[in-house]
Amino acid sequence: MNAPVSTPTSAPALTKNQSLVFDVLTRSDAPMSAYTILDRLRDHGFRAPLQVYRALDKLLEFGMVHRLESLNAFVACAHPESECCGKGHGHGHGTVAFAICESCGHVSEFHDHEVDHRLGDWAKARNFKPAKTTIEIRGLCGACAA
Amino acid sequence: MNAPVSTPTSAPALTKNQSLVFDVLTRSDAPMSAYTILDRLRDHGFRAPLQVYRALDKLLEFGMVHRLESLNAFVACAHPESECCGKGHGHGHGTVAFAICESCGHVSEFHDHEVDHRLGDWAKARNFKPAKTTIEIRGLCGACAA
DNA sequence: ATCAATTGCGTTATGCTATAACGTGTGTCA
DNA sequence: TGACACACGTTATAGCATAACGCAATTGAT
Image 1 (tube, each protein chain N blue to C red):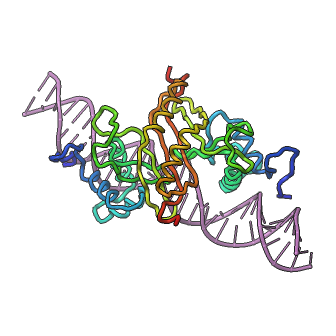
Image 2: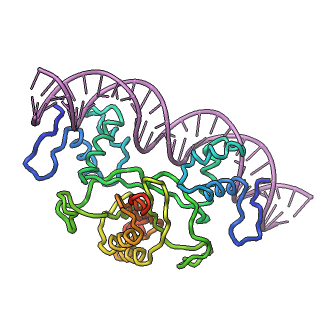
């Protein structure tokens, strides 16, 4: 009863908890902390942080959700589906960057090949093997800076 | 008695607590959490986290210490003193990037003009006003990847 | 000189973020 | 059918960070 339910889509099948967490994040305009997600899902039977963290772990693994390190919060991935520069396997993009507005909370997700390459070159020159790269710009978005 | 003590150097004068925290970070090979710093300084009279956090806030403000967002930890700034590309005011560098080895914990701090520019251009094109940019690459350093 | 503003400090209490450790149920597949 | 993998639920605990109080010392304008 707790196994993932297969769907007609190409995306990985999500379990009930994973779907609930993903839906909440998708509907949100701003990043959400795990505990805020938990509160949103109390009516759906969520009682403990682990239920959220376990779902988030899987969603992160699937590339459907990103963690914002400077905020200790999470956002649904903004890439529609099959964006540019897949890494070969199914899910998609390479390193992604975020611009986070400290006034309205809005987050813009973007990708820059050149930045990716420069960081990759730096690593290669030093035999550093990157596993995960975080790029987050905090500041004021156009609307709030006006 | 708690005021900063002036020194013959050009760096900002540090208070006793600030010096203690900075010294501990400087001597460390790896990033340290605030609570680890606290434990190292119990013998010097530190009793509470706030003593550490307050010192860290100032050191961050002075640009003498960096916070690693993906680790919730802190490192002393590796820039000797007057590196390239100061931002006009005294303390120094623009955006800095970190390569963090997940095996040995070593952190390399570096700067890349090109990356800076690309991210700056992205922001400018969207009227986004950057306040602070975080770039952290986690992976395996040359020594550990071998 | 003196008073107000500022800054650093110490303490207690609290809140937010994340994981350990245990046991249950279910689907898969040899 | 039994071993395995995986999702789940629960309780407890660990780790990171700040609020709110009050005191001491320095600064600097009057």
